[in-house]
Image 1 (cartoon, rainbow, N blue to C red):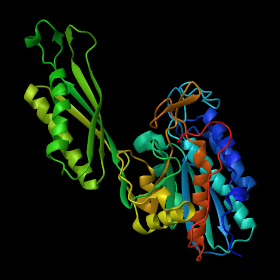
Image 2: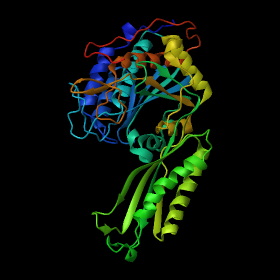
Image 3: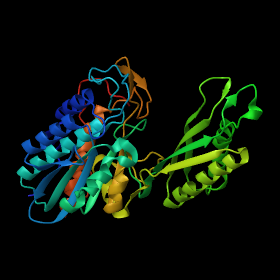
Image 4: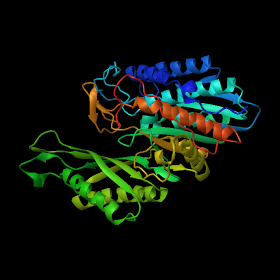
Length: 424
């Protein structure tokens, strides 16, 4: 038999909401997701998955087999929170000072759990699919170059759990709730960190000629760095060089011994990334030479450019159109200069990283407060997206594992839990 998606029967929105709120109240930082990992593992076991824990410490994979043989599909969600003091005032706000789910990973994990439950029910109903589903719950996405995706790969993720394709979904703040965003090729930027130290000679602020002031080349570098973006990078390409920290001295009348800069560097192509990696040290050392100070540059490579493959992105966008309608799908979404370590998985396997609109879901004092980005103390994942995200994962699995995925749209409106007014 061929089973079609029945959201009302299969997608457990109330369950997903409860799981998300439980995770939100107990956020865990990278490689500390013990409680979250245990919750996920227990749910998967209860639904009949083969569960392997301990990948990258707190990561785990749930395996579900359909029929005999066939293709293997990987769906990934991240579990970690951020070191931020939450200020939403919501009933399910973080109970742990200085930690919160400020990027929506609680929602991503809950959506994949909801899909996991529905897919297990699909198998019990005897769907005529052939293949193996791997649900990848990853730790430590927020830790930059030391994140959980590469560590899971290094510990044998794809050799132990072969995947013909991998997919992941992230919420998209301040975009229409439940709208789906896709893009073939580069979708998210690389992310590198640069630490520059200028060393001079300290002295009294009243006799600067007897000192060598390192704050001057530091200040000049802040401006000169933007000439790289303006004059070295092709105007039709994207590059971001952000000076996130500039620090020199302790008081007003002392010329310091050293000045420091920390940069966030992002690009949407490997070529531009390499150009920045060459020119930033050149500019830094050039400024040091012009002011007669010493210079040290530490260039830390972070996440690579995230590149979606064409066939898998077409498949994912087709599923979204057929489930939710043409007006809910943007197939050529604008690339973003945010970064993601799912890029490492896409370097190993074909696949697609997609986004789901989160609406204006900022909160303060327990009430909606309008637009809000991720990594903000007022951010909250929109519960109204849970049913849509889970239904998409179920539809994608059906399309991937079956040969007769429906060719006409079905009607589906995400059930909204009566826990708070949904943001637009």
